[in-house]
Image 1 (tube, one colour):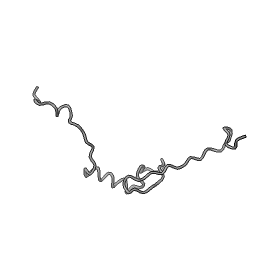
Image 2: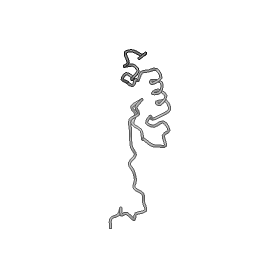
Image 3: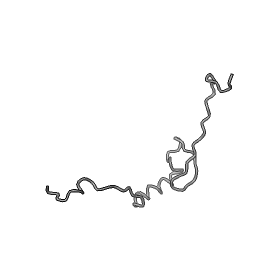
Image 4: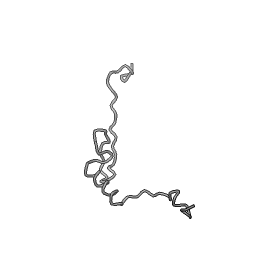
Length: 74
């Protein structure tokens, strides 16, 4: 019989997922135990928030429907 049969009570060991912190680039374990995920720390999360607040990051957007109207009184 196979050692890893379906009746084996030992749970399968999952390999920890390693990801790169978007702020500092350090590899760390991605886990629900980390309240700052996908960042490695509170500091890296704060740095990223600061970059958004200072508009270093931008999301490009097309013109809204109101921006396309030539005559706003029409």
